[in-house]
Image 1: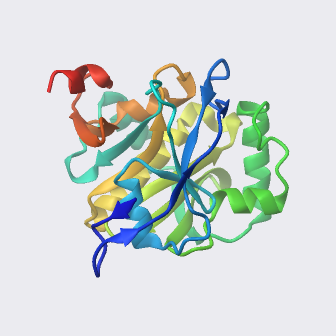
Image 2 (image 1 turned 90 degrees about the vertical axis):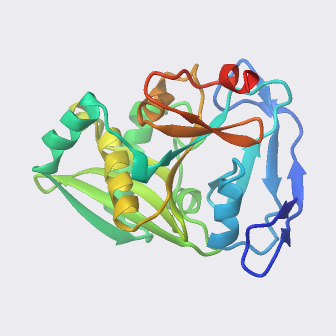
Length: 256
């Protein structure tokens, strides 16, 4: 694969594809994964170019689904300078802004973060592969060693840690890596508020996009992602724009 929008000219990056395996999102299906050579040099600029081609990272591994005719996994990004919150998001922001304290922390292991993560995983994803993650595996899952600036955005409610939003800071965008929160405080919709805070940070920095990772219509746990409009979806090897009320999917692409 040639990545052409790099300073100094195109970069050729070896890509590999896995054998078929169980889909981690839809257990009744099989999946294959296209991934960048883990031994190839990687940095924030190159990773941003891969994000712009529908890739994503898990720890240091950069990948995207390659499941043939199955096109359910759709990468999403928000053009932050055009973002227009809906009524629910405006209420969320107004309710939390006066109570929640934000603090950006370096991407270092923190026992309080780890305890929050374990509580969140056991409540929301107890059957997942990270349910019993060790401190080392937890940190490897969230942080890439090959560069790019990653921060842990703490959201605290009345001196109580409510959520942590892991965010990659790249030259022209932010990427929402993962957010975990206290399930006892879910009435504050901390996941939604974390994205609103990341959008505002990208706007403040004059960046173009906040990348949200993959969205699957059949997964209720991902439904919150499509509420941030306008958004763009990587469909047919290009980004398609969707405004308020537009249904995301291949239907729009097939009409172009």
